[in-house]
Image (cartoon, rainbow, N blue to C red; front, side, top):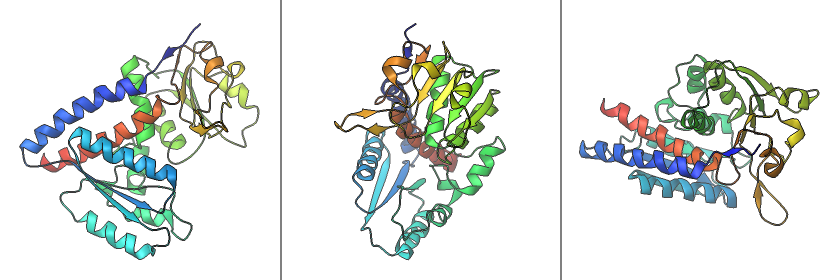
Length: 283
């Protein structure tokens, strides 16, 4: 068996074309979707992520504002800026690029973002709404994974879904979305006993644990759908996921590559959330 490749670049391109059309329709009514991104510090990876988000906004016809601070900025300066952005009618989405420097309380920063502009979906109010099955915003990476399923005709209903990783950003919201799609969900983590026992049962396997090529072919049920959320840099500088792509693609029925899989969809769904926030404003 050779797995079907779930191409995140191609899907993202199709979705973004639709977003651009919707943004143009909003602009004709006097509203241009606006996203503000706050970057604290000089982490190279964070700088790349922020640049990609700003560029994606420009290509989709959105307004974007990048606000950068040095790593030693006082937290009150960032909180004051968040209050200003919360009140700015031209800004529909706000995100603070994580991780933040150690002298910041990240939870407090996320809570300072107005829930109606929390396009990352990390505010406690939005997490609670997701838990209840009525999300205002869906965290971008799990949202992108669900778009893969919809586009590929993969119905989670009745399937065994196993998630590797329990983060608030991916693992937990991914579990909620799959549960709401009527899958039977198991979350595995660093304390899980006999991990391979669980992964071999999975009709849908989502790997989000940050360990290069951790999931091998012998851990995967033949015919499973494998979603690789991980992104790891190897000593030679190349990127790889949490899944041994070469081996697992011979066992799975469908798989996302790294790069070119979940990554492009994460930024795409950030655009989706920002657009949806702007559209709510004009309803």
